Length: 268
Image 1 (cartoon, rainbow, N blue to C red):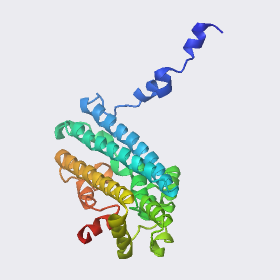
Image 2: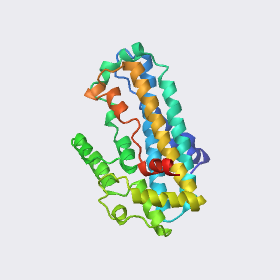
Image 3: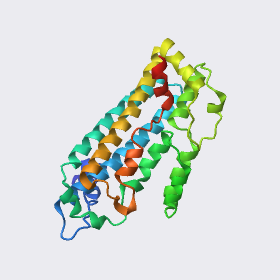
Image 4: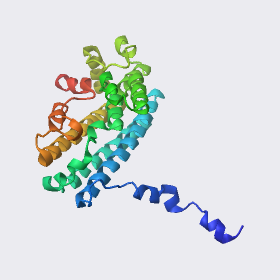
């Protein structure tokens, strides 16, 4: 085989990252193409890539807790916080699109809505915000239902964290360790007592707790920036595809994933 043939089959940057396929995925619905539709598509595709990476890190975080690896859990949480900052920053790019620019192609989106993002629902489930009824909204997509059902039935970050503390000798309430994983973990005064012990006596695991609070706060910030972006773009109108738009986003703004970590603040 000649050197020329070998070179043509070499992996290379473009083949490794599938650049040609990636750059072919931005397909306009507007005709003639509206300028800002390209930005809209790119931003949302990038968000889905970040959601995929966050799910990858969430699974690694849970594995780290299950393995009792505090150092790995800490480094994973720090990476996720950096990703979240990037996700928040991208909203500023989307806000350069004026309401008039968005309206120029909004009707072409038809029923498409960010409310339908399967990966963000997975993130909510893995963070413990589990709502079984949401799976039925994707009944027409068996693959999506399967993914969501798997997340629903699997330990959340909080479940893995509770087991992590239990394995270190902390007296975690049995009802938390043996509960129905498909339901949200309830706030627990007994769990808060354990967390107070961690904060007062265990600096290593206290750092993990604080990083989890940072993660929760990071999602609060992302939701806030998201809802303000939606408000400035379409006001309080119904979202695309009949989604509730800003009204729904406002209701979810300050719902914490890890409420016990917030509840102990007034008891420290």
